[in-house]
Length: 336
Image (cartoon, rainbow, N blue to C red; front, side, top):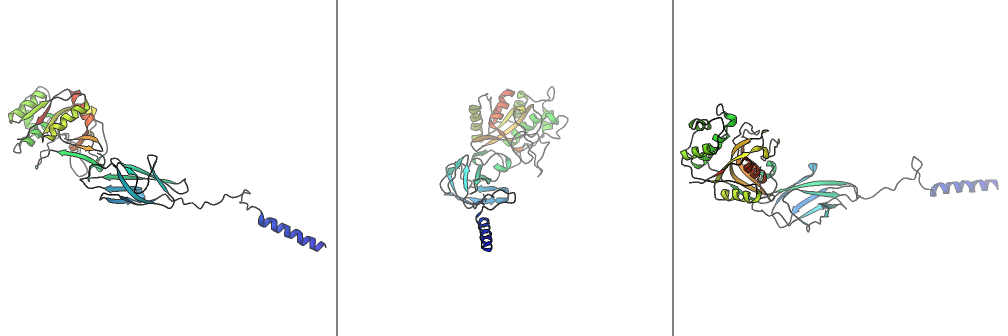
């Protein structure tokens, strides 16, 4: 009898152990293991209805999209994509549906991918362009319009190493550039320009610039910009659309400074004062206007040896302000 009771007791203990909750090492019940994926990856990406080259750089979480040069309206474009199992995508808080959701690619798209577990997230930066220069130069992504009144010969003239007034020779240098653009045979230096018209002090003013251009029979139209940005910007664009360049006297302190060595946008020198430049074109990029200039301040260079003042871009609103604060006239050079 005692032996049977003992066996029954041992059986009860065994059953209790089998059916009791499994304990963790710390004595508490362990949490159930989730079977949902924590992967948040963009596996493929393509553009609907438009021929475009697409490259996913997964290690940097970037996607590069190269549209054709002819595509200037990058709005209302849908992309097809695949994600990790169970993952979802959003942009600016809106759910993205592959092949259906349309976005504007003028400006970077930050695609946030949330894993199936609802916790893990990864952001992919989608960079789309219709050219090979605007993004690395700092202009933006999609060029809507481009005007550049260049010549098929080199007419950039800098002020460095132009005699004792090199630091102040922006006037003679910019005026010499204007004449060189007008007449390819012009071959005088800024130092020769300064010596040809003696002035009191080291600066060239309106009358000096005008007189020097008249010496070479340059055909020009003189005008003044106002403090109203859009109308003045349109006035400047109109002169450039006519195939002209514009010699401007500006106050550089109104131009923001940029220390980015590879960029082509904003002021690249650390002083702000009166300064003469040549405006030779403009770009409308991501719906913003940048004016393309030849800035004669050539004391700084890119790593490839090109002066930073060559093919520089200043923002429309800042350049207009720089002009009217200086209060001087501008000269549109009319081609022969």
